[in-house]
Length: 316
Ligand SMILES: Nc1ncnc2c1ncn2[C@@H]1O[C@H](COP(=O)(O)OP(=O)(O)OP(=O)(O)O)[C@@H](O)[C@H]1O
Ligand SMILES: [Mg+2]
Image (tube, rainbow, N blue to C red):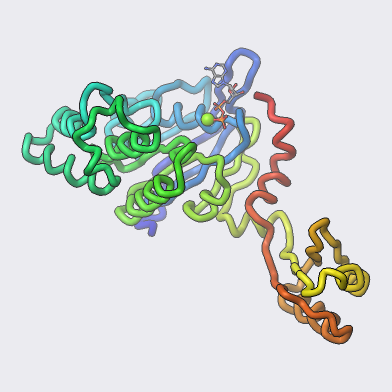
């Protein structure tokens, strides 16, 4: 639900080298206000470096980046006043309880005592931490810690929030809580830039994806647009009688069918429903029963592999 179309993050020709390694090599993209942008790429492609520069933890060698109109190098303090970064940044005090951590930071950001207490009550509830709220953080599990970290990041009502792999290592329930939170943020008009190793997550959660490799953008678009770029849909058929798989495969050869080891027949479907109908008709003529037939787009995993190459070739 983007309120306006104006870019809130602008990255222009960013270069960052670490010795011989060009972590960023002319990186360029924009994030619009209220958008959830997924920054994806294989290990070592420059995602964390990008987030570190945008959140002023790291200076670029050249190029520029602005957040809410503020330059990350020359206006760092202003950038920090409008962003939240979870992960390394929000340093939790291990000896304090979750509630005390939130209250402390709310007070540091200028909230009166009663408001800070209320903020803690609200945020603990929002992140499913009400019960754990009065336990010391050092006794929290990894998932609870991660959720508290995200809650702490929201205390200052940031305009832009950076989430570097916010769900890595979380169980399904905790991951779901983070997803809900990201959606709620977007509904409030907060811009979210997140990285993730889970393509399913990017597919579900993001409005747009910027795919980077070697510190450069190699694709930019919605998950649907990226899928369209990489390939046409497939018609996927499972025949009811496993003994009929070979016959069906031969019958559909003229459509370019391939049969997988598990007996699933895949047919390129450049004409979508027309291809599906033709395949169905051919099978019916031959009286071959199917238990499942449908059109399927390439998955984001397939897109990712095709555009970035083999993850085994990762350089780090
Ligand atoms: N402090 C550093 N010193 C030296 N090299 C670094 C440093 N930080 C990052 N790099 C290198 O820069 C490149 C990009 O790293 P970065 O952490 O941005 O990747 P990433 O996309 O976040 O990877 P991952 O998916 O593994 O988190 C890598 O080759 C990495 O080894
Ligand atoms: Mg990283």
